[in-house]
Image 1 (tube, rainbow, N blue to C red):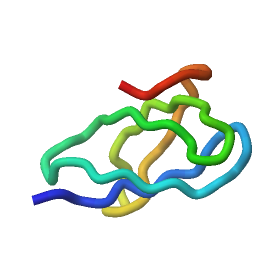
Image 2: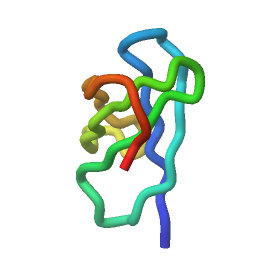
Image 3: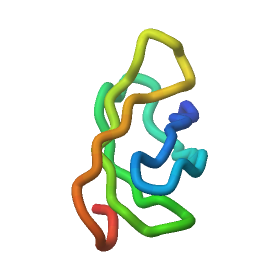
Image 4: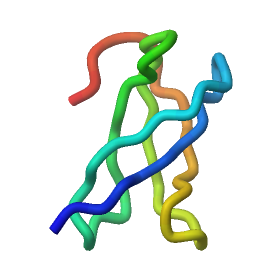
Length: 60
């Protein structure tokens, strides 16, 4: 089953969401507003994930 990873873009502040596997602890995604790629890491809160920018471009 999939879980929702909610994260805040560090560049523009937009809230983003991505579906990830339940057991995932890391993921990558692209901001829907400014298209900056981010590395995501699971946080203590089950839905909100920490985001770190990777640069502009398509997410893997």
